[in-house]
Length: 326
Image 1 (cartoon, rainbow, N blue to C red):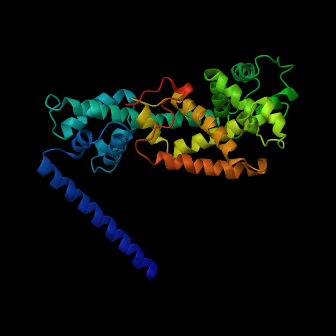
Image 2 (cartoon, rainbow, N blue to C red):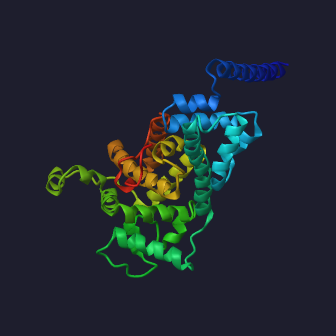
Image 3 (cartoon, helix red, strand yellow):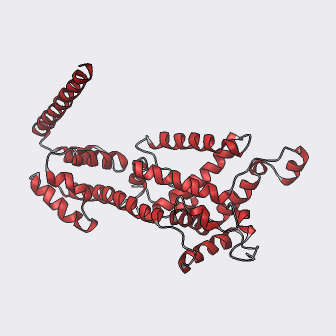
């Protein structure tokens, strides 16, 4: 009986709030002469604040046209905006800025959905050692990280030097598929000095705080490092989950003036990799068994940052030179 009453109360509250919200929207339109989409675009600054409000308004609309507008093809956005303006009886000649603002928001909303699909496709594609493209990317990763050290053979213990677990890295990509390799290779190629420094520091992270002479003088205990490549795949998993959960909307809506792309995701990975490395050194774990604790603490910090609607994780990061704030 209590369960039934609780459900009844929840249903009543839902219908009450929905009805109240509809009434409020009706009253606001009568008072201002503007629909909700106009009020959002004119009263909210560009970026995540505006785009997320537009997205919520469209998804919550009783109009089928508005509901489906967030999932149209990128090429259909212009026509969709024309249909929305006609539905809302808004003259585009009198309100030219509204169409421009709606287009920017829809490009971001639809682009984010498409980005999830692109990332998911890479994550589901397994590494294939018989695929020349896969092999080329893997060998490039070694070349960028260890340019002065030739790789003796494709199957080699040397892979452990950049943080893989065994003789053949392909076994380490099972969790994230090609996505892990794409991210690692992107970081190593696009921001080579930083990637090489992170790799070096990951072997002895405490060394990065001191010069070689200071390190030897202090005679500190062996630093607790981590496996660069394995951590890169793990941070790829973190970035993937932030993307799929929608947490990265704040970041992408603030830094991508139009549709966010795979490059934006990879640049974000570079930033997360760099920041996790600094965070690991700050946390100064007792041993590698603390990795999951440190990673979870790092994840919570990133999620908290992304709750700020003005947050852009890496607008000035070296690997993100192509990013532009709206």
